[in-house]
Length: 121
Length: 107
Image (tube, rainbow over the protein chains, first blue to last red):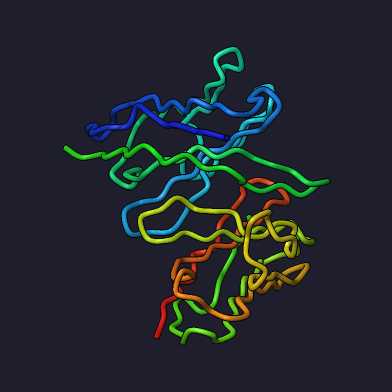
């Protein structure tokens, strides 16, 4: 069974930093691209970032570019999101999600429960 | 960047009704579109990928159609357990934008 378990969330002051982790199990982590998706309280889903299976390619939403960094450690089956220069509007539950692909089309086929990040003074 | 819109933003229908949700991309995305269901307090769940392929385990009353810029998610006979917010997502190239969501309730 695929399992994705996020950790590292918490309360942080504006301008602060956190590192979110996502521990993966139940599949060969090193063969899958991974994503972070966030959801502000009472709001919709917002795609944040993606990383290729080997970490060689990354991409970010404009809203976080230059402040967030996605990375992975395939030896530990763990995905990370370093979040810096946090703003109130970054308050959200951060989900990691596995990217599955069929042919050239991809989708997020497994999601973690999420880690809550609250940015407030 | 390509923008994704959904309509309606919410709907209320009776059990057994046929329900349709529309997702529109501001530019063509071929069939690189997925649909997700998020029940209250739960994690999003993949329903449909490549615009019309049903994910394993998803009831056959769900179906997807469309290509290019216009897509539709249809629930053939609405059930109480279908109460949820439904999101489309483009996946042709980054950013992998989600639509704003459509909330479905039972009348």
